[in-house]
Image (cartoon, rainbow, N blue to C red; front, side, top):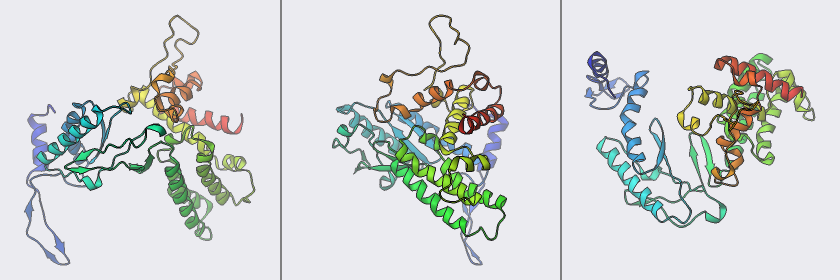
Length: 351
């Protein structure tokens, strides 16, 4: 990584000379020296672990595949035509190389905890191949969990929405029992911690969802607003959201996407998202030049028909271009968020 001198000595002193022991009631085992691993709970440990895992990404990319690594959670993804006979071979070779690298670096790859999801058109789904890891055939799953989000083979997110709505309603039911004991301000804080946080987690995925799917999450927010305001169940939700100064669910999702877009454009977000958006550059000087607009991708670049309108490369430019120029050109992230929320609030309750 290019580290040397005093910095390398600091890291060496941080890692060496550590030991661990087991304690049962008042009895402790003898200390055992630690020759690998990083101390839990320190600020430096996650960075050192990421440095340790960095070569794994290079191994995966050498097979033409891509990956996302979140701590010890490694996800491989590979795009190929449905009738490809080369893809299963490449995937098996890549998995074998990953297994070999992990064994050589004191890491355990468990086939029983490894899941495979094939995302494709309905007519191409389930074409009969299974990746092999350490001699174990990995069955194709109907849905997998990725960092808490349930992804299905058609990317409908129906299972994810149902799960989030169910857990949020369950939490809201528990919060109702606190009404006799807490002030409204405290109840609001609890609702945000236990209910709203669930609706906001990865809510950028919910933009442009079909109404019948998104409605489940809208009902959660509506029920929370009626609970805090004491309104009747037949009361309209829009005045309640305005009273609480809440953005409606769909606008909260748009807010998340537009903030991510601002970060990607200004070097504050991951490069893989920045690669999916590009500034609009007209072939000849037009009035729109210098407006900080984004290009809309051609339909041919968005492969899956059922989800192409929800792809980040399609949603981000469309939402970004709808913003006033002064918001798009905000000098800081803080000013952008503040101006964006004001604009969305006006759009939700005034327009």
